[in-house]
Amino acid sequence: MEGRLSAQEIASHRSTSSCWIVVDGKVYDVTSYLDAHPGGAAILIKQGGTDATHEFRKIHSPDILEYLPPNACLGTVDAAARAALPISSAGAGSTAEMDVATEAPHISSMVVPDDFETAAKAVMPLKSWTYVSSFAHDGSAFRGNLDSWHAVRFRPRIFRDISVVDPRSSILGSASAFPFYVSPMGQLGRGHPDGEVGVVKALARRGIHGVISTESTAKMEEITSAFTDEKKKMSQARTSGLAGEINGNGPEAQLHFQLYIPGDRSIALERIRRARATGVFRSLWVTVDTAVLGKRTADRKLQAAEALSTSPELAAHAERAGFGLLAHASNSQLNASLTWEDLKWIKAEWGGPVVLKGIQRAEDAAHAVDFGVDGILLSNHGGRQMHDATDALSTLLEIRTYYPAVLEKIDIFCDGGCRDGADVLKAISLGAKAVGVGRPFFYALAAYGEKGVERCLDIFADELRTGMQLAGIKNIDEARPELVNASRLLNEMWRPEKSRL
Image 1 (cartoon, one colour):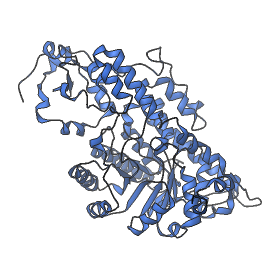
Image 2 (spheres, rainbow, N blue to C red):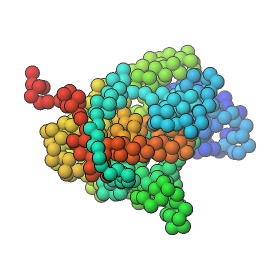
Image 3 (cartoon, helix red, strand yellow):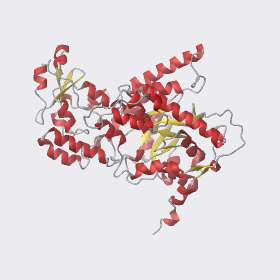
């Protein structure tokens, strides 16, 4: 590493031929990385010659810098020179592409989970909005997820004493205030500075489980530390009788860790060991539906447009973006060669409960049982991966029909498209242990920060309780198959006798 660099020198490097950025007082030459950057070259060039720390923190964990070539760091910049540098504003602008940003409405107007989406769209930068709202191909799998919940209808019972209902459940043996959890979502810092820390603090106060993404913008140690501190505060509040009505005496929140396995096994091993060393994560959720990245149509279009608007020199770059060659996750971050046999070393290294995230057919659910996993998440990655992939409820019905023993041997979770707390009961009635919810909490965070996440959790909880009362059940154990009518999904369910040509 060389010595300190001046602001004038740094500011002169902001082109395709030489691009430097400053992150946390260190100067990095990213010129050779322009074509390989998963976010596209345009975003780096826009931040070239500036202090990009603020924008960097919205998207990346500090850990990512460790994987840059050693010679990428050119030196440091002192406080005076850093203050003289322009501050990157590459992420500025609402979804109206630099139109005047609209303020989010007062949080009291957030009554259903979908309300947060509208509020978030008004305040989020276009690139961030595109990242979280995008889906694969034409969005058919995403829409299928949403539609599947409406395809199942309730069969309410009457004349039941539902003056008091108990929505408590458990996830992998740990008590949970409700049978839903916050799904893993990468890059929460894109939505709000509170990021993952804000989410886990809200979870701690509500006694609800959450799964933390490998691709978090905060370090996992920072996340778990904030979570533990907040749980201590809650414990003290309970002792002093100041915990309040919401989860004052309910189960404690728990965290789980979602793992992407990259091509370099040593990186995966390091992630597992770090997660285990925190002593906080109750289980490891291994993502199995991203051997390669799906076709994120909106992301590709935006990257191409950004490249063309940044410089004519990036025309070839824009063409590559249209084919997904500049996606937000590079090939090195994924692993197209994973097999069932890899579960052996993953389980051995973790030494605790393991869940496979992304099961999309009943046969694989049965195979997962054979390999000794503790749970499976039925999911098509929020409609962001395989075109026309089946929804989680349909896969759950496949398992009930062809491999019912799976329901008794492991915990089954569902996610994708759930936008109402009452809908959680539909999956529970069909045999799921809990339902994961993702985008509504990203939107709530983006629009209102930590307070928005709490509000969204409370809305889901309120809808679940009311749904239990109107369905005529007092506790989650009473959510049985006869409580719902899934005939519409059953009529379209895959059947082996109809698949033989």
